[in-house]
Length: 306
Image 1: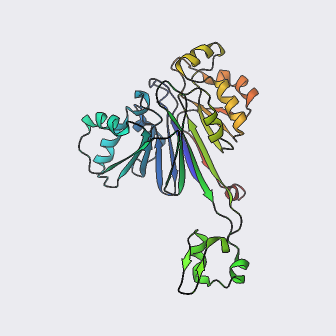
Image 2 (image 1 turned 30 degrees about the vertical axis):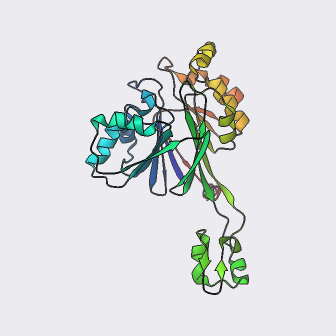
Image 3 (image 1 turned 60 degrees about the horizontal axis):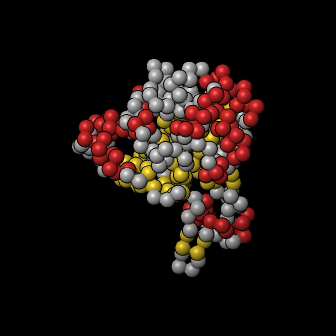
C-alpha cells in the first residue's frame, strides 16, 4: 500500500485557502516529499503526518514556489534531533541552490546527500520503490517523477516441494533473495509465479504537454498533473509561460491510459477550479480537482479485492 497526499495545490504564491503545490507519499515506514514551497510544513501538520520519516525530498525545479520552504523544514528536522541522513534529488545545480538557501540553516545534526539528475531520464532505486525522473518542458530545467513499486509473483508451495527446497529457505526466497548453500543455489524464480501488477504514481507540474509525460505516466494508477488554467481563453498564456490548461492535462491522461487524474498547481486567479471540470471530464472522465490534503491509499490488486 502506498499512502499519497497532495499537501498543497497552489502555484506561484500561497493563499489563505491553498498552500503551494507539494506531494508527500508514505511507503513501508519511509516518506518522500516532492517539492517544498512556502507553507509546506503547515500543510504537513494540518494533514497530521510526521516530518520524522521523510528521508527523500525531490525537486521538480528551482523556482521559489517549489523550494523556498526547504530551510524551515531542515531546521524543524534538526530541532527534532534528527541524525539519519536526508537525501535530496533534483536537477543540475542542486547542491549550489540548497547551500544558498542554507545560509539561514547552516548547522544541522544530520548529513545531506545530494543526487543530481544529469540525464533526460534517470532512475533511482531506494526504500523498496523505483523513482524515475524525466525531463519536461518549462522555462527552466524541470522534471516530473514516476514512482513504481513492483509486486513479486505468488509463492508456489508445490514448486518448492518439487524442487526439494528445504522449508527453512522458503521465506528468504519469497522476499526475492537468493540462497546459496555448499551444494545448491536456490533462486526466487524457482518458487515464485509470474510477477503481479504493482503500483505506479506519476507527478508532474510546471510544463507544457510532452511525449515524456505520456510515456512515463503510461498506465499509472494515479496521475497528478498541473492544471494552471481552467479558462479556455488562457491557452495562449499557458503556451507563453510553459504551463498547461486543464484540457491539455486531460488529453495527456487519456493518451497515457491512466486510471485516475488529479489536477494541481492552480493559478492564484483561479478561485473555483471545479467550475471547469465538465469540459475536462468530456476528455477524461476520471478526472478530479486536487485539493489541499486530498489523499488516497493506492493498493495492490490483491488488497483491493480483500
